[in-house]
Length: 194
Length: 194
Image (cartoon, rainbow over all chains, first blue to last red; front, side):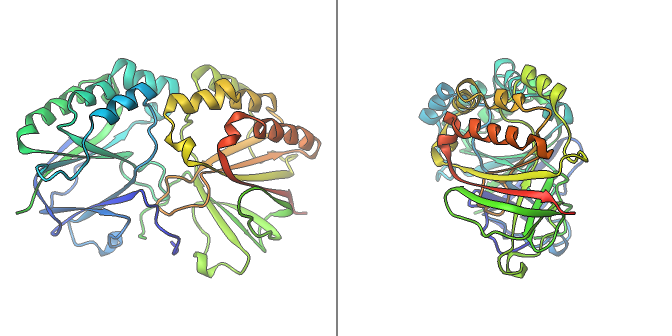
């Protein structure tokens, strides 16, 4: 590539032997597994080595934060009024959930995807129930110049006391109609290293 | 970057001294101008030299085709029933229109953007009036890993006899409420070189 400036909304999740987050669990939910590593770093931009130069077993996933695709103004106001920022001192647990959606999802029109996402799956409404306990940031990977193995990377953080609430949130989303369109997913659970 | 495979939906518009399209006009509509070149090539993937290695005056813009953001199922059915593919033998004229939308546009929620795009600006409905004469392909650039100067690149082709219809289409879109959010735009008109 070239020396064009990096998109300021790009983040890289670099899993390997270094980084401030210690991996406690890597669980393949659907599809091909990814290798478990010791540590995770969440880095702005794309500072990861090239794929060939990554140490054996290490991996990097990249995504860009973007405008919301499905939220309406009243939903956004509710989310803004309730949500907490990432990085609170007490948020010592974090989870990375990469997902890919299947071709049937992407062949749908905007109104069809919205109807499944919210009217039938209550994605925003479910998320709202766990605010401000669970903070999150969504990254898009589908429209990067390099083919990425996932469509979305979501990064969550929370305090240890809110881990059961986070598990409830995950279970509710995975039971939704929207999740029938997810054809690859894993969860990487980490704790802030002491 | 690395050797990850290229996104199969990525295209590069490379303006310089080579390529099958001869530039007939470069017009800055809004914002900073771009340099006029002799030729344009439209290439799958990202085969362009790095920015520093491009000859003086040459430039490259990249974008990814993606799922539609605003179209409903009935609108999509109408578009699919009427549209023509790019590259028809008689389509010897083509136009590249890069645009950037302002922060106010991107701060809006999906329902607000859709209302301006279609209910008030009739973007799909206007486009439909010029099918199948004008074929088009939309590329997204806003969520690439490198910061791109535009949010969208639209590539149109048509027969010479349909050039007035294309001008009407452009005029109708530029007169719409949606276009108040466009803060950079140019048009590059080309003809298939003999």
